[in-house]
Image (cartoon, rainbow, N blue to C red):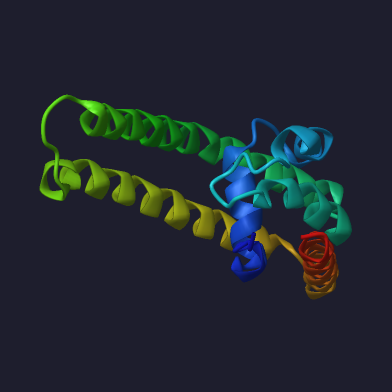
Length: 165
């Protein structure tokens, strides 16, 4: 099984996790086990936020600003995720309805889901840029090193799984 996590930029992973968490950076760190199982749209990237923020060693002022960014975007992110869930439920209903169904029949639902996911991605990118702007070059370097180490560990884990098959 391959993962696309390695191709996701660090900033997008940070932002997606920030958008989807229900608390501050500190609360995110405390709830890493809850979010780490692939609960976000980034396929598990949400669990990396605490590591990245912890490795950056935020100052109290930076931590407060990250909390503000997360809080400001939380309601929008939740709304978008709820809309995605509802649209996916609508699509499933259409696919499972009696009678013939073809691609043209579900195209409006597919387009709507795509638009919502794109909005989540754009919002995540903006949040990532906002969080990134708070970091010093040294903090960004520490976060990048932690990210590189996580990628290496993921590669090693994939190799172990492949060796067992």
